Structures are given as structure tokens and as C-alpha cells.
Image (cartoon, rainbow, N blue to C red; front, side, top):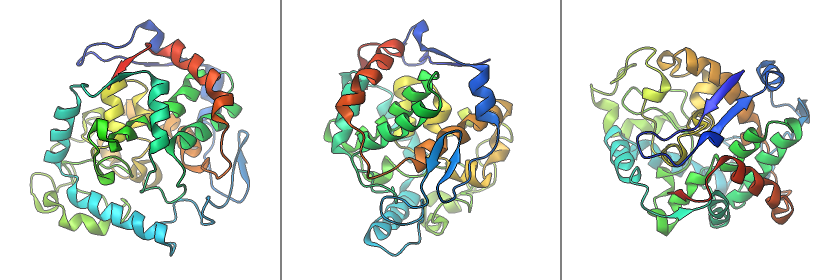
Length: 311
């Protein structure tokens, strides 16, 4: 069996023994078999992925000619220029204080009604719909793995950083594909051309393959571009691979940065591939009835989390 432990030793624990999630051997066997490929009405273990997104384009098509796509490219231009090693250190130091709010997981979900992700080429609905669409898709295929349903529900909650109460950060400092800082920017990253204007691009301390890291150091020792994933790691320190690395698309699609991975990363990456198909390809204009599913997800929150968390 594979066990994923939620803990927060450096910041003061917000969790107890309820935070231990056990993945059944049956689910693990299902998860580790095969690869998900995006084809017209293709189905894998029950989940059906449409060929086109809610805008009528192929999923994650960053070259489609539309106003939406132009905005997405401008987002990545700003992100690639501004996400430096020093910027990430500054953000981590500021937000690890967890002094912005105290609230429940569901209260945070409801805050996402105010958030639209400008980096997303596939959906422009409030983010609570994305959370529930991905969670419901996983729930259908893995009905007995409630921890996985909960993972989908909470994986993007860090996007509250866009709201005034949490700093009202710019979109480029909250959302989008992530990448390591402190080493060379791999060409597999979306819109790589804009990295040339990042101060770290020509810094000899940061522009080599390993940079400030060592080969096989493990992704938990690598600083990623700052955003909602890193923030949720600070808040929960749980199920970290799904939240911190689900947006590290250059790694799980192109194999970039694999030289920094250790054995534990490679094992967990198999589960990350499973999670990503639901995260990326469940986005739809068919909305989830929030009030209908709310009691189920509230029961999961009560099972695995304290009534209130520090944010």
C-alpha cells in the first residue's frame, strides 16, 4: 500500500492522525496501468475526455487565434519575466506566516466564486466549478478513494491569492504552469522565448542545468515558481505532489527537469499522471450543481481536516 501523510512540522501542526490517506492496492493497480491519451471521445477507466474545450478548441492549444489566447500569452510573458529565484524566496517568507485568515476548506471553496484563471486556455468559469468538475470526474471512476476526491476539490484553492484579503497578487504570481527557479529554464516550458528577459536567465548562478541544486536532489528540495500550488503546500503540507507538481507540465508531459527527481518523485509521478487527466480535461460548460454535491464534500472535509485552518 502507498501512504500519503499530511503534516506541517515547520509551521505548527494544523492536523492530526485523520490526515493519513491510504491508497488501496486495487486503486493503485488501476492508476499505474496505461497512459491517458487525448482522443475524440476517448475513455480511460470510465472518464471520457471531449476532443475540444469549452471554447471549441483543442485542450491546451496556446496557438489558437482568439482574444482569450492573446491574453494567455501575455500572462506567460509577464510570468516568465518576473518569476525569479529571489522573488520566490520573498513570497515564501511572507506567506508562511499564515496570518491572512482563519477559515474552513469549504469557506475557501466558496471564495473561488470570485476567481477566474486568466492563464487557462480551456475555461473561463469561476474556479469552484473547475474544482467540482475534476472532483466529480474522479469520484465517478474511483468511488472508494475519497482522499482523491478531496485532493481534486482543494488542489487549486491557493488561487485565493488573487483576492484583496490575501494580497491581491497579479495573475502571473498565482496561476499558470509552474517551473523550477534557480536553474536553467527548460525549453519545454510554454512560451519559453519570454524567459530571455528574466534576470536569472543570464545569471551564472542560476542558468546551468542543475543551477543551485544537485542531480537527483528530489523535487521537494527544488523551489518552484511562486503561485497557488506553493501557497497550498504552506497551508496544508499534504498530498503535495498533486498540488505542487500538477502544474509542472514541462515535467509530466515532456520529461523536463527529470534529472532533479529522486526515486520517491518517480513513484509519485505515476499518480500525478492519473490526477492530471481529471484536472486538465474535465473542464466543461456543463456546470456542477454546487448545492447538490456540497454535503458530500463537506463530509470529506470534516473527515480529513480541522474545522478551521490558518491561511
